[in-house]
Image (cartoon, rainbow, N blue to C red):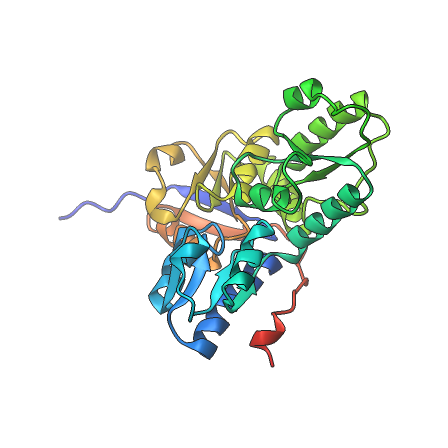
Length: 319
């Protein structure tokens, strides 16, 4: 007589709301999809359209060709600029070659660009809070002449920054940063430069803010928080940091279910699950399915805010 299978351990999964795609990511992906429908393949995309390998691979399978620089693009095919934004030199080079291009820059990133230009026109030196080398930071710094922007990555940077002469200052931030970490850097800057004007509207985007607030709620009662997102996704990496600071016993970033290390689940009874702004919901469902194969799971939504923001597509794709 065969032995009865051992009962599976119970696992309560609490889902963050909101999670996954934001309006800017959704718009950027749609731009590539619509361009492929309208103009046929290949459509060239400068840099990853968003920082998620599954999204990039799916679009590649439809005929998108991802390149690092514009000089890899032929003259006779459409080019899409990524959601993170590009330096001014990139559209200028595209125009010089008479390329047909579509700009998928998130409108909230474009807002930071406009604000930086406004400060520069007013004679202010700009302090950009962000991560060196991130495409969004490269794009924002590339809106202005060399030397017009100083990058501030840490509180230490804020404390050691040297003002160029008596130039007035202003600050802007990368849209995907940790709210709490950014607040510390801004406080350090304002302690030294009390006259620093605040942006007209918070630079860190609504989607980043909402996802960080949701993961804080999860973390309070979670033994482990899993964040679905690619390692090069800034907003996804920040969710892991926010979860740990908010009290989660452990928090991990995973590209998809295949990246779960089952040792993390030992002794875990309450799991928080969320996804970065560039991660498709299908990957979240894949994680739930993988967990359900090993545990007796119950899944509940945390009842957070539902997002209704949408951004218009470029006229060239809707006319």
